[in-house]
Each structure stands twice: as C-alpha cells, then as structure tokens.
Image (cartoon, rainbow, N blue to C red):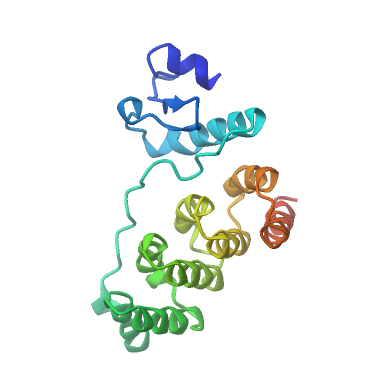
Length: 208
C-alpha cells in the first residue's frame, strides 16, 4: 500500500504526503521526502516499518525530525527543578548527567520533560540513555514524550533503545505498541527484546 501510494505521486488517499523509500536500503530518498502533518506521521512510519520487516530491510522508525516540544518557563519551576533543568543546558556531559539524575529522582518533574526530550538527540549516548531513563521515571502524564521515544528506538546505541522502550511502557501510551512490536521482530539483542516484552505487557494491560 505504501509503495503504491508513492508511485501515485507520493499521495495517500486522504491527500497526505508519504515518505519515498529507497528500496535498496529502506531509507528515505532525500528528494522524495515530503512534509507530513503530525496526524499522519505515525501511521506512515508504521506502514513503512511493516514493509521493512516483511522484506527484510532496515526500518525507518526515526526517519523524520519532529518539531521539538516547547520548553516550560523555567522561572515558574520549583527551585530544585529549575537548578536541575539549567544543568541540562550545560556544555559539559557530567553536568548534564547530574541534572538528568536529579530530575529522574524527583517526585514531580513533568515540567522538565521537554528539556529531557531535547537530550534524546544529544551527541553523547550516555546523555541520551539517561534522558530516556529520566522520562520513564517521571512516567504517566507525559505522553507528549512518546513520539520522541519511539524515534529513539532507532538509536545506534542499544542502551538508548532499551531505556526508550522501558520509558514507553511507563508512560502508558498505546500508540507505541506497533513500534515496539516492529523492533522486537528485527532486533537480535536479548536485553532489548526483554525490555520491549515488559513494556508491551504494561501497555496491553492498560488497554484491558
């Protein structure tokens, strides 16, 4: 269905622009990637990933860059949380990690989620891993982070993927189920598959 839509000019029946895929490697063809509205993005990526699994190609779980979440006004945060969020903006990795650790161990740190989401794209894999961990610790009530964690399932670092899968289970957004199932079908790392299994169990239980 995806391939047919692309051949028809990159348009779905509802008029949404679809991703063009390079059949040799299942990656977006730069000259054919259209602008997707957020309403259509997850469905298109899921369709592309199902095609990838069926044909033995590499998935494109995080193929497109999302619009960052608007960060909260730091002046309105509690002093302890404010201090930790400021650390997330520091250039030094150890300072960032300290801020992430503090946030992950706070009882009410939902206001820091946009800043943590930004760190899922940090150059350092330890920062990305700990950012995903902290989002998971914050847990339910921060479903706005779910799409970014789904993208992080395609990270080059297995630890980041594992922490993201765990966080998705804690957040409780059922839209993550198809993404997690796709990854479970293609990734050979048993620790990741275990984390995905635990996350899927929580997500499906919440739907019962």
